Length: 363
Image 1: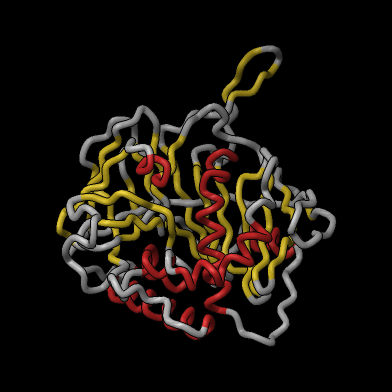
Image 2: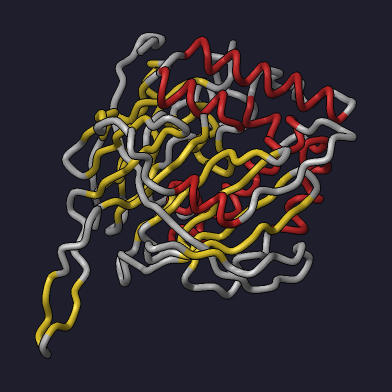
């Protein structure tokens, strides 16, 4: 892996899934649900112009287990993300009594440069000064910006946008490729919007581009139509999406609560990708729910898992198939699901019970 003055780490993601339909205001009508032999269902497509999303429904594997997202943990001052002056490594402290989930692609704003988390990681309660691998998503700045703090990071409202950037981070591990991916995204977005999306305060900052008023205006149509598609559905544990009629990625979680907390950030990234990649005047029929299920199915030629990051609490791995890459994030201390058998509680030895997040990326 190529990096800039740092080390690399590893993590994992997994799941295979199906469909269910529930009409939602402002969303395009979805066809009848598709199903498979798995215990999952997929509803959709819910479409907005060239972006279509699909909801993945399944069983709750972490019922009663509270996991904080880095976004809420920073907001509530339950986690501290500290600058190290190493472009590719930060250190984190968990002040809470709950596990904190850092997802690959999460952008943390502040410090000497905005950074994006390289791999998924679960931070245990009260953890002290744990290193976390990151990539810079702001080329050039190396000092305090405005009223922000140069020694720490205070916000995580956005994620990396698009397959190019996501794979540059967690597959290639290449800082130069990440910088190039940011530049490419800004160029495409500026072209499709018709005006610059680079912020004067730091033109190379992906974070400031995501918060640029021109980008917010351009993505608002997608967000207003799709933001509520999962409302009131406690069995939704993930989503998949397509751009320009092509399946792009899917994210599946062990907890419906965790998915719902992450959903606004996930949709925001998908909407930004759809706007930047839109080819105006080109029709784009959305794939069917059955096609999404096929995308999520295990590929017979999928290679063995390769560790990307491993800590005492969690690990992330990568599996390559002919049509997609699968990342699985395992929580080593995850509680096994308990079933009542013959009137007695019994530990259910379910496959991949410890997988907290599965990320599928189409090749």
